[in-house]
Image (cartoon, rainbow, N blue to C red; front, side, top):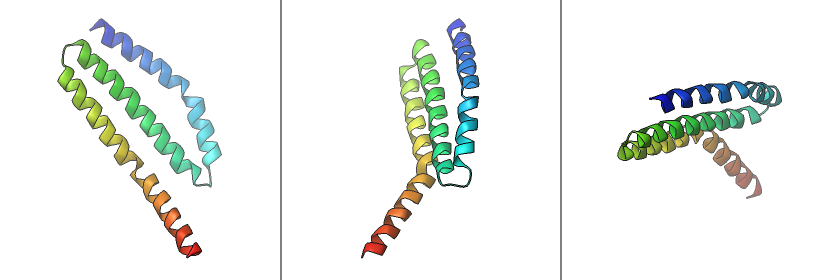
Length: 101
C-alpha cells in the first residue's frame, strides 16, 4: 500500500511538470493541424503512464493476469484515441493520390 501511495505522489509531481509542455504545444498548434497530433500525443502519453502504473501495482499485489488485461485495455484505448488522427492521415493520402492520378 505504501508503494502505491508513493507511486501516486511521484506521478502527480511528474504530471505537474508537463504543464509548460502542454501550454507550448497549444500555442504552437493554434490555427494548424498540429494541434490534433499534439492532443493525441498527450492522450497516449497519459494512457501509457496510468496503465503502466496500474499494471505495476497489479503485479506487485500478485495479480499478473489483471496486469495483462490493464495493458491490453491501454493498447486498445491508445488505438481509439488515435483514430481521428489516422483518419486525417488517410484522407490526406487519398487526396494526394487523387491529385496525382
